[in-house]
Image 1 (cartoon, rainbow, N blue to C red):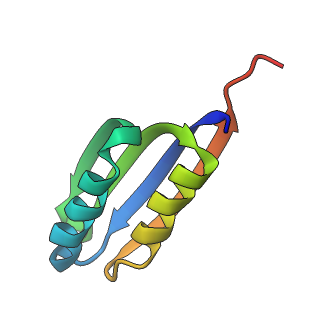
Image 2 (image 1 turned 90 degrees about the vertical axis):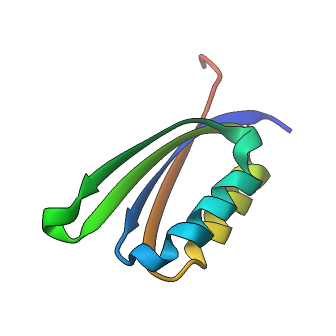
Length: 84
């Protein structure tokens, strides 16, 4: 199956979700290329961006598991790597 490049934006609204979030990301660390977090405590939330490379099924599995975590909001996008 063709590998794609993808990105996930995660907004953490409830700090209690952090342990579950870390566990899910750890379970899928094989497709995660980069991760950045921004702490916006003054606005009462945190933002994480994830850059990943994997098959559409692998990326969907990660995004799907993240979508089930209470206390976070998730959006993702993926693109083919080809130059065409």
